[in-house]
Image (tube, rainbow, N blue to C red; front, top):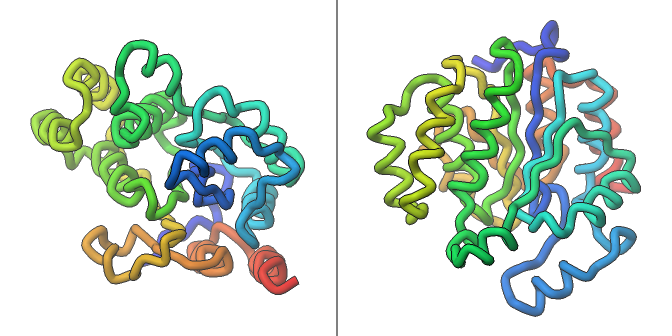
Amino acid sequence: MAPDLSERRQQVVYRWDLDKTYLRTEFDTLRDLVRTAFEPASRKRAYPGAGTLLREIRATDPAAIFILSGSPEQMRSVLEAKLRLDGIRWDGFTLKPSLRNLVRGKFRFLRDQLSYKLTALLRSRTNVSPETEEILFGDDAEGDAFIYSLYADIAAGRVSQELLMKVAEAADVYPEDIPEIVRIAARVPRSDTVRRIFIHLERASSTAGFSDFGRRVCPFYNYFQPALVLLEDGALDAQAVLRVGADLVV
């Protein structure tokens, strides 16, 4: 059964990834990384409908909109400038401390999304009201469906400390970082709080590949699709969805 959020829109926290979810970003090669790092805000491009959907979500007066990106902290100013150009307002913006970890010799951290994103999600959850529900947006390029689902199951009390440690080890998380993940996870109030996990199919993956995650995970090709799901859930009204759709064809 779809969650009915029509009377609880102000109690919903939205969490958005940026690269390949909101922004058209290429970082598959070193040349891509360099170009992305030096690209000004005015040249960065959002996926059609993404900005409109985020603005419509903000108009519902949600509990919060948090941005969680795998981009390095050094890109904060240009990424924030891009979001402001798009008329996006947010309540929290977390970027990856890549340089700090490189200095410490943690080179795997550049590719490690699980420990970074999971730790950030868990820490943020400890700072919001236990009554809030969550809707998450990610993509199919960085394992977001798995990371978000793991986060949701931890919050719901379905992941034991032993299982969490095994998952972290299997994901090749640095051994010295695992105790911190377990410690923060233990502080998260237990509640089945994550209502939807939207995964942008940037790599044109098959939707069938996400069936094992259950109905909570909703893969999509364009932003009209999650807008329709949010309409069904009561999180958006019909006029908002039409404005998202119009952005795709204009």
